[in-house]
Image (cartoon, rainbow, N blue to C red):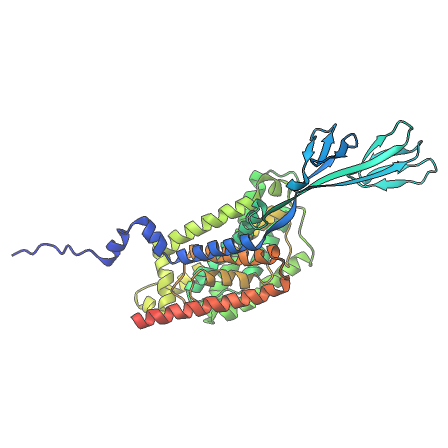
Length: 439
């Protein structure tokens, strides 16, 4: 008699049927998001205080008087009452020069020449008016408002955090794949510098008026291509020489930096076409690129055969070989992708600053590897994610920003980064131990 097919749902099917919100809350990256939110809240509270807000400069024609209500300004487009209770304060400075004095406005400032011929330079912000007796009055009236707010939550500061994170995050997506593969790449900072130098040297040979439609694609091809070549060399070195990636990338870290120094002679590479930095808001472009790398990396690492092979090799290389996984090819491809992403990060910097230098990216390998490890990538291999690496880069950027908004001496930054890596590794080891006991 025919038996009905087994209707027992698989564990994976039950996971897929979980509500979306629950799946998001149970995702490994949810803890990182919580850490970011807590850090943001702490920095917002710690940086709350008084600081100078809007500043206004009034013309000499303005009539400024002090009343019981506050400072009253008349005869000015911004005339009004500025209350001390609202945090407004005035700084009024006047200098009177005798009749017969003349003045001239120059790019260096306002030059006043008294009758005796002694020239006096007044600052760029000074305005000059003439009194009835012919004497000159140089006057500057500045109103400043003191406000209470969190310096961390200022739009410019939040954008700075995102921009700072974006450079590390783009490289961390590639570094995470290398670490998942049970490897390490210490040359990411040098690749970043060399790729930027290669792009800058070629671009400065173009006509200064070259269109952005030509210059930017060329810059992208040069930077990403140079980074990919460097990563390919790393991968081939690991596969052919059968040496641990730590040794190979430690060597190429010095080689790539040295090549960048030879190409530049130690000088800054500038003179790229003006259309490159002017055509895009490169700060926002870097942030959008970070998000794109996170999403594309998440799909590639978890939804493709290539991504599953990365985890297979990192989890158990011997078993992966027996299963027919082309281990050497996967290893070379991963290092090449990591190098290409280093070049992509260099493109973001080249576009923003319009220049490159061989000293760029110093100690970036520490922050990039830290971002990947903090993001949940296991140094033992076989575990990690692209989104986690990006979230780890955001945490690194928040730590850096904390030194600014909380006015902590920058000398402590390396100490904090080192301790952060130790804590992340300890958590990773604890997770590994728990998984082994469960199995």
